[in-house]
Amino acid sequence: MAILKFRVYFEEDDSIYRDIAIRHKQTFLDLHTALLKAYEFDSKHAATFYRSNDSWQRGREISLAKYDKPYKVEPLLMADTTIGSEIFDPNQKFIYQYDFVKNWVFLVELINVSKEENPKLDYPAVVRVEGIAPSQYGTKGLVGDKLAEMEEKYDLQSGAEGFGTEGGEGEDTDADEEGADLAAGGEDEI
Image 1 (spheres, helix red, strand yellow):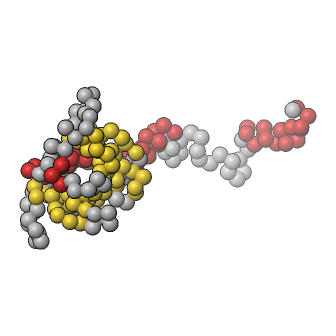
Image 2 (image 1 turned 135 degrees about the horizontal axis):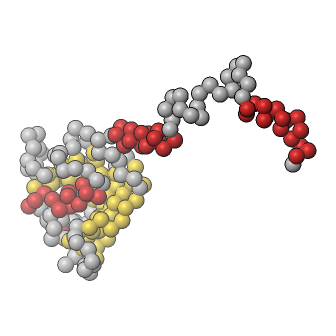
Image 3 (image 1 turned 180 degrees about the vertical axis):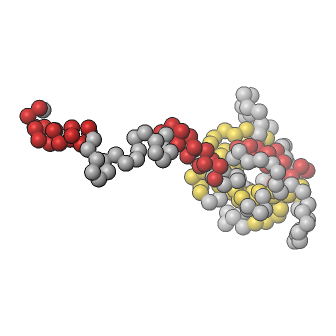
């Protein structure tokens, strides 16, 4: 049984990609599920693949479901379409679109065909991960959590010890006196 390896690039940054190995008899629904898992996306939204050429032009649609939109040609359905049936080129390309509102687009390219299965893998399998995946719902929560962690770790609240009015006008502090002592005779002590 042939194993197809696809490289799935995030459209906006080709340094972010996932390699997915899949059997040629598996369906586009299997590839869809593996792709979402590889990028840590949920499966709550509409999705479709488009057969593509070397110029990344959209061709025949292989859709998760038949959506309420005009089609030039009836779409194939992911659940009924095997991957091998849509491979017409040794470098076959597909465009994957997920969540038509957010419009996540991934470029899917066949990079290897092998006749040998790896008995340790459960296909489809993510076999390589490069780059940090984009956050499906934006970075607000992620950044907010990270900032909260930093705030707790370094105690960055206003008025916290180590921050504040130290060195203000008219204040003599121990640190200022030590600095003056070192400046006056610092070279002799070294």
